Image 1 (cartoon, one colour):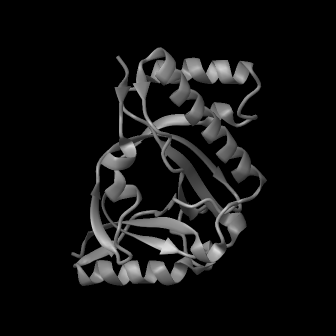
Image 2 (image 1 turned 135 degrees about the horizontal axis):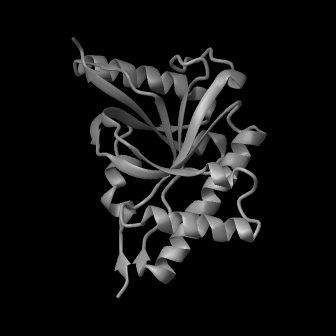
Length: 207
């Protein structure tokens, strides 16, 4: 009998919050397929990394349904961004100096050894490109965060981030986490002014 995981419903408060105003959320420790790199978001390396990530995510999902009797949806892709020199991302950070981690949530029930079997099979079939081997399973413990849905092009995110930072201050917290985007909308299909992105920033209580 197939086990069905309704991740989009169970995790809706984390991936597609209703409120357009910032809210505090406590993000549990979660497992992902992830790949890290550097350079402009949307550039060639970024696109190759995203292709490799999606290839393995969908390959694992289809194989899990067939071989593990485990059915679940592939979740929205996410990106975490920081300055390649080790500092926090700022609106003035040049794209070529940005580092990033792209990731897609993965259920705990999928064994690590199974992922490697699926990866080897995908590579043997020429899928995923040259970066497929760099996609790794990893855990991420984000914890207390402020998040909101940003509606509009990525270039207008700084104003939304300022709202989030101010909200955190009003709640007695300060922003400490890496800039985190969850891509609810597809920029290839959505008009820029209607594009939806969940933004999240880790916070901690002010001293």
